[in-house]
Length: 90
View 1 (cartoon, one colour):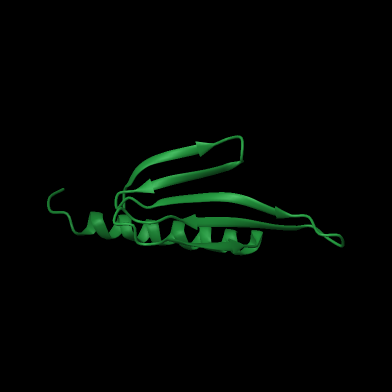
View 2 (cartoon, helix red, strand yellow):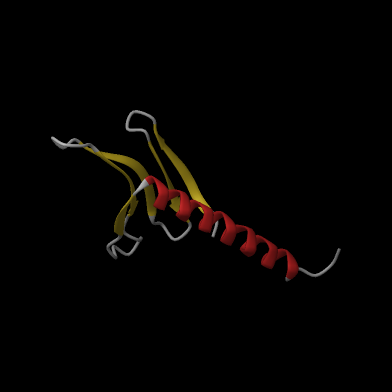
């Protein structure tokens, strides 16, 4: 899926994209300071679609975020190769 645009939020350390179907996907660092140990997560926020259908969010550990990134990159490569294989001509 192509994206409609990229947003950067340097002050908050987050970034996001808007998909062609109108959903805004934001990625941010979430840090909770607790008395015994700080908790740090990567927040993935999928906003509502153009029709107003609600979005969702997930809070991932650093390892989970890396695993998700790896899966996304591998599947993006497969999708690109699948598109090229379906084209006619040289």
